[in-house]
Image (cartoon, rainbow over all chains, first blue to last red; front, side):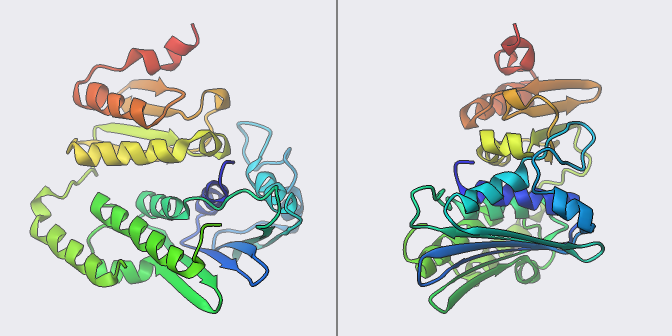
Length: 182
Length: 123
């Protein structure tokens, strides 16, 4: 993947297929420029066996093909930087994936345009709520579709003008918090 | 800095133009973009974005844009399928520019862009 934001989009598709109604995506940078991406959903979750298998590229719950590369790609992108990867899941509760990246490492993949990822997720999934959080230096920005829907009073978030506003809303606020691109 | 007040203004504008808000619940044409790992890695995000933007910008009626998983032709991603009744057109190796032509010539002009189809590329 060219940007980590594409990995986020890819991993979030798993949450959608798992029938999540709430998907939380978090980006946090610490004082050592380690970047943590968290993707948490309230979907159907996985049993212990599947959680173990999901990091194996030759495992997939699909029947149409034999490989599942989404999670292994994301894990590798983190571990290549000397970071870490963690997945936790419980049937009926949901799944949380957490990947830590050393952004100073030569093998670090740029975060990229996360606002594009979040906006397209919101646009294509009107029945799912998304919470996107950015944190650095004790500052926080949150974009929560539950709040946006309240403001919209029943008008769809998938409208192009709204989607474009969401993109800019995230891009500007994220840049303000992170102060530079990662 | 973008604020939530701006979103309220967009909402009010939408409410004022409610009759022109597109309702695609009975769409006759369905466009689906492959958004599995293979598709995303190959550039499906800008392709899906382009379909959404071009269709809205040009006010194309009766078209629903959706997403699908891997349809098994990963080497031809980004892939989009256009469904019209019993007909399916499979477009391969897409980018935003090709999408613009598909929207103009196929979705509006009703003539598939043959050169971007899987049939053309497999010859």
